[in-house]
Length: 344
Ligand SMILES: C[S@@+](CC[C@H](N)C(=O)[O-])C[C@H]1O[C@@H](n2cnc3c(N)ncnc32)[C@H](O)[C@@H]1O
Image (cartoon, rainbow, N blue to C red; front, side):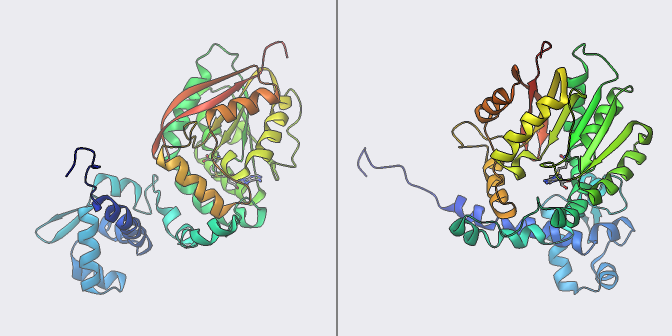
């Protein structure tokens, strides 16, 4: 080998990348069979589980062993059990269940058509349209409610420790379960929240709000975010949680301008999303999510901090800041704040 020869490459990482679909499938099938709930019921051996789930012993043994190897189950002398992670998040009766998003193969099926979407530049589903959103999101927000709770608490703490007046008036745009507004209302006991989303999703939001003991502190605004009237000089905080990526650039820029009007002087818009580095070389989840938007929406994408900064300034926001909110959809994240000047 000459000195200038490139170092040898190892194709193992490509095999790993290819087979990375298998854990995803194993997890989904475990949820779809409701295997974790049966284990929580005390069924801990292959024959018992096979009978309860109407499954083959051969298939179930392999599934249980794979789930064990993936760290979701324990196995001792042929008896299987739940790890703390699986018990908290994969047993259907758990208040912290996140398996709802895995109960159907909607996302899996859409991703199997990626080549078609890349060729055409067109989505194979449109989850931002009312009819589809109202069937798709009630399921997804059950998982997001739990997964977004910790980052929502961090954002709420950051928004409430700056000496701003209390009795904040908050708008949670495309609120889903309402987790961002709920966290803020729990952090500032004088805050009042307007939760916005499509009507059938808001019917779900009301349940989450009631279970958080906040019924008296929430109002509701139903409709497409491109059409509803957010008013003028009404809110201290407007939250955009995981919505810019499905709306895309034009709708989001128009939304920022409408939210600027809807905020009082000194008010802030808080954007939580997947934000790639400026040159769009990472983190992987932010770029993979852009493809998720290609597949699932007409104009969705993920956007960089310089893009957000330019669009917020164009809408009138005097300052753009970021606050760390910890892990959000698998990557360390910062919320982006647009601040309306006090003299505006
Ligand atoms: C990914 S979920 C995010 C929910 C919540 N903000 C969160 O971060 O957990 C997107 C939400 O936006 C709503 N949504 C999507 N497009 C919308 C639109 N054009 N108008 C109103 N709501 C919309 C969906 O119904 C869904 O509840």
